[in-house]
Image (cartoon, rainbow, N blue to C red):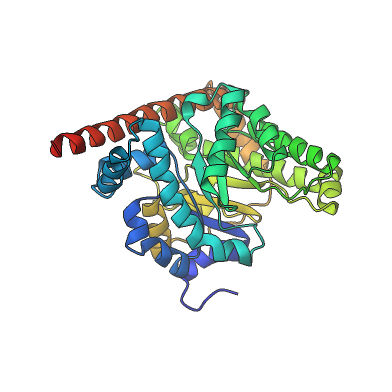
Length: 369
């Protein structure tokens, strides 16, 4: 039951059956009590992070300076090691704030996410090794390890699930890519059941939406503006519902397995001509999650509405996809391009993050001499 103090606009998403997560984390967000307020007042029930978010948090504030200096003083100088220690401190604190949600929903909700190094996106064995190491070090049951749903990432995802590591599959862009990720998760669960292990290992599949519309902006007729992302989302949601309703998953659920949840990512509006709550209003769907930037969360809390509830009907979306094909954009081809570009973008952000940590450390060391 919702608290009387919870914002009715954000609560409306939960009433549809959709969890609302925040796509942001900073040390100030934790220390100021802002995240706790979002949980209490805006019905936020989870959190995601990525290299860009951490880069902005570390480079644009002094909140991490003392911690970086302390780590260097204790003999830790490797930039990546310093970063993961900083990130884990933040995410453990966030996970503890969401622990009541995790317990209340019996592990359905209340998660935070930590990404393996994007440099590993095309290397299966190192990705799995990093996932095992980070989850063990984090020591929080309600922490997802993010692994990209690339061809090399999929075997690592399956093996991680078999090992009992909760996984957020990131960098998915289409129904086809989502199904491949769902298959990897399902195989991991089936292997656990065959081995006599608990099938209850949580996972989400993160499908990026706004990047579709940004990729074709200015390249298609005005009538197709901001139409492709939602069309792809509808196709993906249809595939999701079909998977949950299939005999294979009914059998697994009867054995105690919990389906992988579909998560809408990249839901901040990129088009200045579109409403700032455009993707949140249009992507309300039962049994899903929407993770949104802080400014989008606050905008929706102020003036957002649920425009529609997704059903998996792709009638209109089919027409949209055909129109895009007529002007030279094939969904599956563009999805592969977007995944490659997304992986490259995360590598760029990662390198910038490592440089921010290195520069901070060097300046702090210079200031002490």
